[in-house]
Image (cartoon, rainbow, N blue to C red; front, side, top):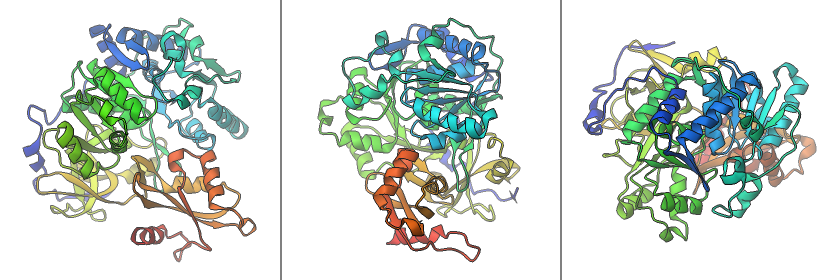
Length: 572
């Protein structure tokens, strides 16, 4: 680890813009995340917790369902304290129930992107050593195929139990309502699948009537293991305890002036750290109500905001852009919205100004990573700046330093954003070298190296300038080129591949692959590569553009010079 003695000049200057009546630091409760549901259930048993199409689920019902599933996990699936349980679902009551049931069973949630294909899913079985997975019926086939591959190559690491749910299992009367969603959704919302002998249907598990033993997990036990990719290798698990997540749960509730009266729109995917925090944990902590959208659809969103008088919406900016572009937008009543914010990509200034002028809404942009349990920075709700990451979050010390020397950067000077705070993860799962590389010591404190380049203005607000890490940000989804390249190499026609970003008018950035074909496969077309990618990787990772080359530029040591291709693309 490196050490730097200097400190930035006046690192507290942003406190001049701190939200009034908001604390600068908070003591994190010495309880588990599951305790939040237990407490809220006792306080607000009959209040609506979640709305899912035609079903309103009270906290009493939610608590009861969590208890039942936790009993099944322990008594049938054999889940013990500290075991990892994979969770792969679209946003749904089942996601909420399963997540809290895993915590109630003293185990660890491994949230998995439902867009992943079988070739990608094997890693989420073997790396965390997950013996149990809870999945939607629309995703079951991919998990079964992935487990077959694991069983064939690493039989001692295969799943032992697969719990499968149809999304209509938690709708009124266990059936799809007549409408309220696009017709294309009907097929996967009520999909029945053939299941192997190690699989159990959701209704059977919930109907078993089993109870869990008394909870024993504490605030410093591992709670969730979300995965993030990087410049090299396969995705890495970020070790978050109940305490690291809890800090941002409590801070997020306070930052937005949250109360039990809030009605939020839960549309950011719950497997993602932001959707997990604001669609799942914060509503349960507050005892408020969240309206769940399983997938994005602008007109469904408009109707739900109007019908349920949604007051708070955390989003990816492209969602708001899409909603405002709907030909039906004038039919929707957005007047109930009081707080809107998000991150993952910058909100275009013209759209932010339209929201302010037309609806009186200030978009509160934030910044964070999986490693920081979502926000490490956020704009003060009363004094946000546009195209800005915000100021260091509650209890957070963040600085901009020279990435080589760790010396503090002057106001306006670009450097690497480093972060110290109670929400920072505890390291990468079973990866000591990556953990050591991720942290540096400055002034006697451990700071996480974000890999993002930024600057600080005279008011103490942070702005993004560039990235040290090789990452593509497509509509808020992080695409790691090394991971896409590793998947492309499985294509029989691909000899070499280099993935870079290219500008996109809607996504901001999108994925481009520069490919050298094998000599015996020169007839392969770009569309064939793209079609294959759709079958073998999550849709957001798929190259939208494929360019063929005779050779890739390489350094003297033989490494592909991806920066040369990226610079050519960026300046071309």
